[in-house]
Length: 439
Image (cartoon, rainbow, N blue to C red; front, side):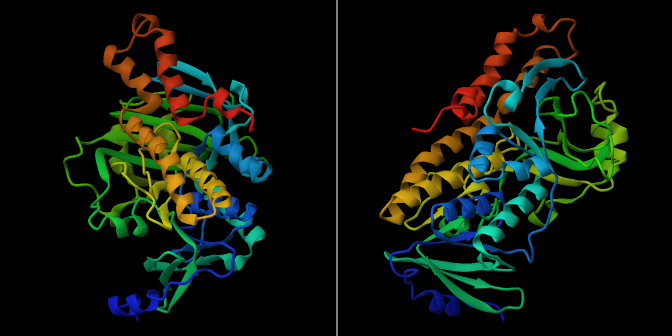
């Protein structure tokens, strides 16, 4: 039986506090941001329950890069050893033109003098790692799957949230705060923006996959080749020396601009659908080239891959509404440029947990979190629309569309490093920012 509007109102009309002087947080969404928040709140002694709509938390998706400022926070949560077991510490990032000419080569993480590494990792393995840690530390009953948020209501003493499971059974949970970490199609966000519409699409489609192949360069190298019109992102995300000695699981992303964004975006049901070789190969063969990797052969060897629209949303003027707030993609979905999506969700989680632990009034903590994180992430959303650090590629390709004999004739090293360095400082992962000691 589905919730009727009247039944939902009756069930959640009786808002009450979680009880006593203890705080309880209700987290909507069991992704990277929501699970990190659960761990961070648990560290602070705050009771927490995660509600995930999917029937189970599975190792889905492909690769993700997690930057040193986010890894610093995961290390503080005691997860560095677990990350090393399932990911790869990225040592260098190489920017190239679509035809494979090198523009800029940068050391990353520890190799760049930071105290913490950058990780290339399978998104599903990162989520599974966080899920396992949450279950071990909080208890399995604190992660409720198959729990769809239907409605919520708050007053000055607490929040009540109505849920429904896959069999139509319904119940209400009470807490002191509710955090929407439920992604770009967030139910919590929609409650405060009655007609949010579709996410904003820039006309770029992304094909993403991962396949076992030979490593290239250092075995910990990452390549971004091509600008916003045609791009390849390539990096290894897992080694299996026992099962596949000498091989690495290679994550790849092909981006192609198919329009200016004015054409209709793929419907929500078409997100993350299986890709077809006939659709992606015209954007690869004769368009993207690397000496290090046979790109067409790699894509053809991929058992299955997926296609997504490159989307974000316009930054909000407000995340927090009393005892309810947003986190991660629910708050600030951004183009996957500069490796910042998952990283910023992790930073959100730690900031929010710290403020909730320090504040006497949960609503004050959520307002302070809004003031601290919203401007910072809004700046990244806007920067990513312009290419973020990858703008160095667009700059060179615009000035030398047919390639170059000498890069110095096109752009100076200082000009290129200034673009990348400015982005790192804005996003908070320069060496000086990451290595800054607390207190």
